[in-house]
Length: 166
Image 1 (cartoon, helix red, strand yellow):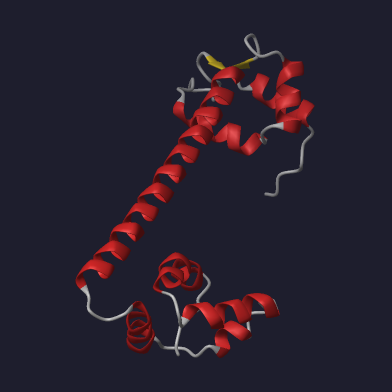
Image 2: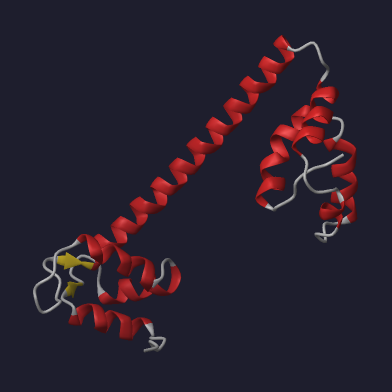
């Protein structure tokens, strides 16, 4: 059965029918939140953290609790993303320092060896992906010259299914 798209007023009525209360955040504020800051299905997903009566009504659930959980979720997501990016950056710095201090090869040879060993597709896969001429030229110049460039952009290429070959 397909569900019909409902207005924010209809969604609020549905929540009220399920005993979700609007005493901390009013229905008017909830309507503004649903229309401007969040969407119903995301907020509704947090209902699963609360108990229901046998008839399907929620026990002591307030709209404000759902909103607060969505805010905590967003802040946690931002924190985890920031931490992951910091860890990724630190690992790349450590790797670059390790290569600089422990290998006699220059970085150009390391990049060339990497591309030779790990490649399964040709550079034509990059040109066939509708990248701008500027990006493609930039890529061709830098990927074969810079270990730094390789480390910082390799996740982009692998994410987009581009396997590099010289």
